[in-house]
Amino acid sequence: MAWILTISSLILIWISSLCKIFQASWSPMKNSFLTNGGALQKRNVLLVIAHPDDESMFFTPTIGYLTSRGHNIHILCLSIGNADGKGSTRKLELHQACTILKVPVQNAKVLDHPDLQDGFGKVWNHTLLAKIIEDEMISHGINLIITFDDHGVSGHCNHRDVHFGVSTNIFRKYSGPIDIWCSILYAMWHHRGLIQCLLNEHPERSYFAMAQHLSQWVWFRKLFVALSSYTYVNTLRKMT
Image (cartoon, rainbow, N blue to C red; front, side, top):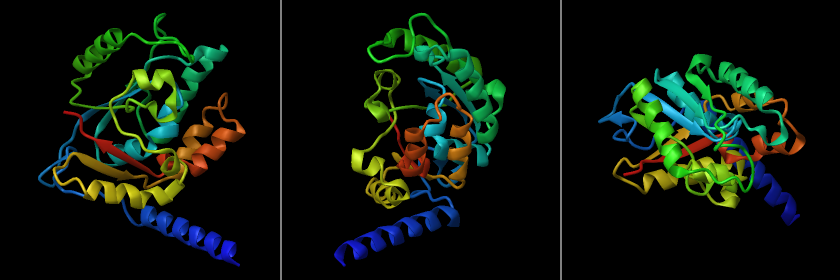
């Protein structure tokens, strides 16, 4: 009987969390680094990722929030994800996902640098990364960069090399929309506009965008998209 009550409670929380998403996007503070005293600043934003499909697996709440509010998003993918010899296919899949995510395809740049190849154990040179990102910032007048934290979300070494963002612990990572409440509370505890909590107003886009990456769309990634908190909410932390 106890387990029935537990499961029922979890289902109720899950449904309530989804209702929170569909109700409206929520930002805990008017004075955050995406706004200026409540006034939205249109920005040129650079999302830096390691592999094609990172944008769909981890950043759809952020992409959806920014595109719906008129920000100009550029995606810099630092490798074609050629660990399994599918780099050309994965590059095309990223462009298809951009269409679903409403990011102009011409704003997505995928690199195939000999020193930035996909794979566990492939350590990327941070100086080289900094130079590439700096050039991209200058080229497009970028004034905001969003990317992984130093844990790389999934722990992938390439993700860690591309860090500077925010992540979460393993329980929250796979708590699906329930993590919305943890993220909101976390943002409310920071009163200086350093934390921005972004809800995914269209979580189905995460599924459809990731489905464009057919070469990677295996059962455990389908499960990841359904259960991962990154499908439903992103919490961004301003780096100083």
